[in-house]
Length: 169
Image (cartoon, rainbow, N blue to C red; front, side):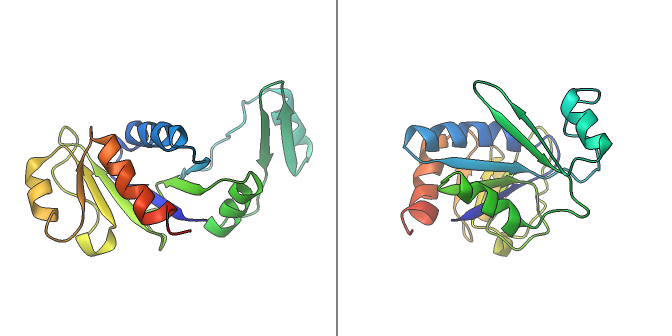
């Protein structure tokens, strides 16, 4: 299963872009798993909810089941590896794992850069498989070394993505 990371500065538009990519890939019939990297050790479960209270009492895995969801929180001694995260996605028969963040890991990277946020990328072109921006200056700088897509051209980007990562399986 391909694992592809979407990287960029904070508030660069990664989440908004990923939402559109997820919707497009889903419309094309692909099963998409996602993971968001959070560098801080904050609770992902609502504090004072029963599942949080179970974890505080010592439960290693806290689950919440409803008619439409099953949420599982594994309490870890150290951060999970991308391999462990990908295994979770494979258990749900997903076709691809899209990761937001994880810029230090050695997985295919797509940088998202929004002009309103920054005019400097965080990656070198050699580190990327694609660059997504609404900044014409960065577009021109990267186009000779890596495919460049406009932030709003989801259809073209997803066609490239499918050819590169999903049709090869």
